[in-house]
Image: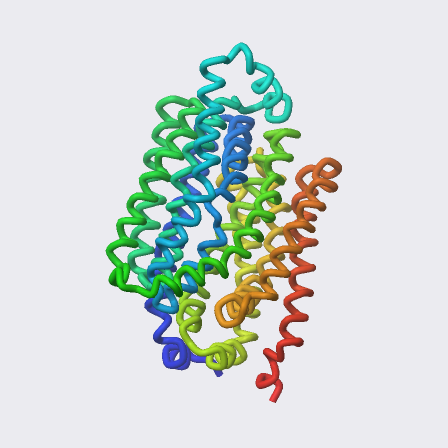
Length: 427
């Protein structure tokens, strides 16, 4: 029988880490809910859809930050190669600088010769009727600082959970104050978006300050750091493919911003709860990643079914929270979001276990299974959203995500039995 003393004895070393991360995650959940509720009530239904559409376009260009490098940073820091952070930033700068310069030139051309390039604005309005393309160009330029926003991967690998907690609490608090404050004062979507970008820049500066404070001496093994970054380039390719899948909200938003608003609220609780789930498994991932391959695999085998049951519990919580709080908080306009939320909650069940298995593959092995899976799933999702969203709008996105999750679970089950991950559990 599992008792409190048994849990403390077996997992006591992880409880403090989980508590620190859990605090900021709970704060983040309620803080982001407050942010969304305030914004929804400050701007009308359609403009909120435009706000989400605009952010979706911005997020689509986040591939410029080469998010696959976060895996390289985590792996490097876990293996005591802190210089991997500098190498990752250098690689990102080389990639994005020409694009950044070209974007500024395009914007200057538009400002100086607006009459001669008016067709560009007309073309954008045809596909994104709710957004001014000039603002998109400016916002695109201001995504440049995101290449420096890799501090969380570094600090988590350093097991600085209390520091990560404090940064996240600051992030949520200031987002409410700055973005909602601007929305309340000006009621203008363009000012709201610029305040969001300003907030991102401030957080990036603060995060990198703490990276420098916690970095090992400059005498780290830079050759090993470069090798780890080079190994991580394949993950950047995977992430680049995956960014095309972020067009799902853009496609839906161009059909009808109001539909996008309904979907965004519907996915709100499953996403928040799924992010909260990461807090429980992050200390295990970071601690086990320092072990040898056999020790890591032994830990995974012993806790295999525990992570599966965690997924079931989180699914139940997500379903109940969605059904109760969506109509209560967001009002009658978003009642259709309840069904969306319940369906998307099904995906959560397998997430804790799959995250642990794929992390083992990337940290202890060469990440071959991860690479194949993460290369295939975005391609499948891209195909599905372009086929299903025009026909079924909101339910097209939901169906696409569920189908992709089913394929992912089948693939991970093959990895499990092919790799013999359960051999000792069957004894």
